[in-house]
Length: 530
Ligand code: ATP
Image (tube, rainbow, N blue to C red):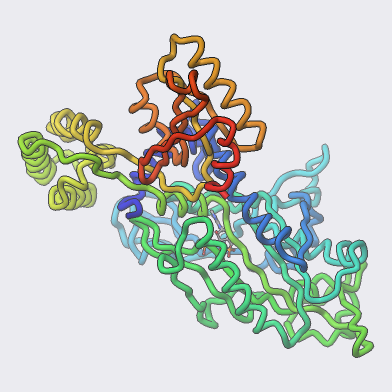
């Protein structure tokens, strides 16, 4: 069962060092996050899997790493200077600013409906280039990685002798000055994109669009986001981006947020290559493009069979790494009951919850919306005890919860029961887990056990499996700690290990244990991790 609220995932991600708010020591910066020790491993594994699947395992792809800064003309002809806008409104009562299409005519801060008319706000960040700040010496931080691919289309074609159809893949930073960044990693101002521009013969674009839709769904399933958790949204004509003939948005069912976009798969037609090309009137373009007097290149393909130059159509699968990270964490998250809590302890938690509901419902310190949210959440936990018991912690982390005096008592009742009877486990697909193997000595003050455990760690790490050593607690506690970060295998070195060289391997999901000879460990684990 995936996470039931986003708070559970946010709290785990912060607690265990997956994600930190950027510049936390100065109060942070809105919409910017850092990937901590475990987050960077997870992110690298996701990106690595995407690269392997899309570049190495196909015969029709090349990779690219284009710069973030580009000539400003790229963004003029791509259409971003003119159209990369969101509708901005001001609340006249509390002076806050909002994205009009996200708020349904009512200020989320103060509830006022006295809002200004929406006006277009361009989301590209500007930065000065060179030492002199004259008005023309600026560049944009790219809002998508795609344009770096289009600008290099002719370079890649010339240096690789590719024939259509072929694609160029790229992973890199993108920046958008979102009006209201929110929902943790979901809507941020700096993020990473994994993008493919796949160039095809005009007329074959619709077929390729359908093929890419299937290929992408299969990749999502492979990293632990199953097909039945994704809806395909065929974007209505009126809502399509200026370059698109048709777009499928993959919508993942995020906890708390509901269905939201994790990836867009667009048919960008001949719009981009056409826009950036010279001699546009000779190219037979189907897309409507702005006249381009600045480009130095013709971005065409020589179709030998028909002895003519064509402008390829483009299929673009584009996914954000942050939204992907949030989806895999949500999907993998589980608070699992490992043994039934004693009835009287459960009853005490239940009563503390009822007291919390009563107190929150009557509280005059909270505004209506905060009060309702707290009560609704507490009621849903009360109705789903004992399974929902670990969620008390995220209830107490919600806005306004610290104002409810009986919250402390509730925590005092719930936390020991949760610690004693539940485990939090991230059922990550092993290949993307930040740590693959953890090795523990049964006793930390025994030289033989410690030395053997450290040797095993080193040997496994040499086979490129991220392996850690830990001796800072009892074995049961160490297992729980690894479960919570999704480590698929734990190895314990005990006294029998010193005699016969075998160790205990414990599997995360089933918690089953098996004895394996140290000499066979690497092969055994490699086979299971894949
Ligand atoms: P939305 O409608 O949610 O703003 P979009 O349609 O503008 O997204 P695209 O331009 O299609 O998004 O970008 C491709 C992908 O990049 C998205 O599917 C998403 O995964 C990611 N992405 C876009 N904007 C953001 C953002 N502000 N924060 C995190 N990821 C983003």
